[in-house]
Amino acid sequence: MPCLPPHPDLDQLRRKAKDLLRAVQRGDTDAVVRLRAVSGHLILDSAQLVVAREYGFASWARLKTEVDRRAILDTREATRLNALLAEHPELAVEPMLHWCDQPQGASRWATSPCCATTLRGAAGETCPAPELSPERCSTRERPRMVIPPMPRHR
Image (tube, rainbow, N blue to C red; front, side, top):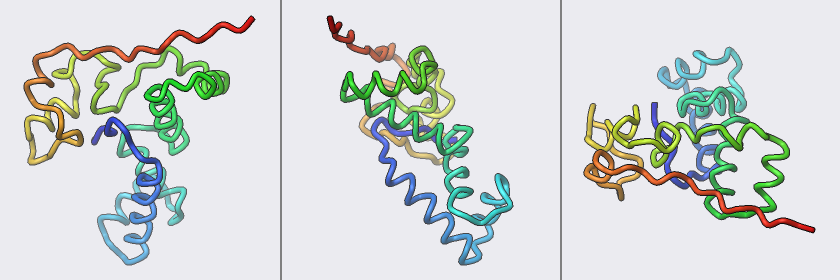
């Protein structure tokens, strides 16, 4: 199962789902098998579900929410973070899983089921974040995501 890169593009993930659907419509047997594994309907929603599940998420909506959360945390936009947490309060304590640079919710890189192996080139895979070296991956403690304190309004 691939991990999401540090800065995923939701539009690229949408295009990936559309490409999968087009492959199914062309009769590509691998694409048909992937789509039929999650749904009997040959529609874009089903292709998006395939993409989400291949990244380890239960639904497209959950994948989209996680990508949004990461973008908000990276930019430290307090207003957007407040809005996201108002809609999804569980995200305040839920670890960031399925991310190449935050494996196991920001624990040691070496225990990551996806990055620890891909950075070392296992099974012929390449790392989705090639700027990170195997030495950095396996020998250093990863820093935790730090959320800046929210300003208090009086």
